[in-house]
Amino acid sequence: MTKESELALSHDASLRNKVFKYIKTQIIKGQYNPGESLVESKLAEELGVSRTPIREAIRLLELEGLVETTPNKGAVVLGISPKDVEDIYAIRQLVEGLAARWAAERMTPGDKKELQKVLDLMEFYAHRQDLDELANLDNKFHQIIFEASGSKILNLTLSNLHQYVQLARLESLKVPDRIEQTLTEHRCIVESFLEGNPEKAEQALTRHVRQAYTNYKNRNK
View 1: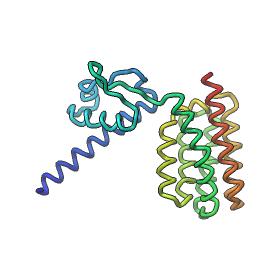
View 2: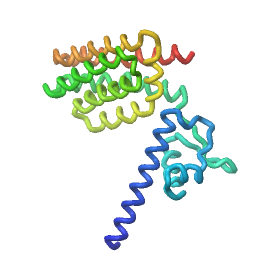
View 3: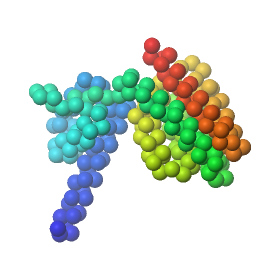
View 4: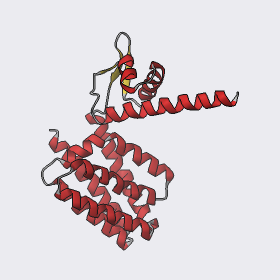
């Protein structure tokens, strides 16, 4: 294979991945609703690409269970079902507790400082009722813990799970008093890390995930 051919293949793969990530994010955010058709020509025009990377991205989305291609209908969005959300939160309760335990054993002073900084920013934006920024900071808060666990596999698993329930987590924050509850739970989590207490960290994070799902269910009854 020539160098030019290798560069062309690399470009094609990069474009496909960008298209895939874009459509996946839109589905997860609820911009493309379950039952909605993904029209290749429309997406190609919207993204300014040919239909080939759109078609390849849709195949990848099928593998992730976010899209289904059926005869005469083409690609139809499946999205994230309530059962998917329930399963993800059940898994998170089990796995994030382990991540917190390991993180409490391995977290560096720099990690602790960064975690406290994110919590301070969350409190600032909570006063402004800025849910989008709070959700972004909540992602960062948990990501620090995942990375501090020292497990590449755990980090990858939980990062993916968090991505799939972005909309559910935002909905949970809309429940009355949930923002202040979240801050209280995060303070308890940070305290456990500052103390270097693995058991307390595991319990605090498990409780936080369980409460988040309870709030999500109550809002969507």
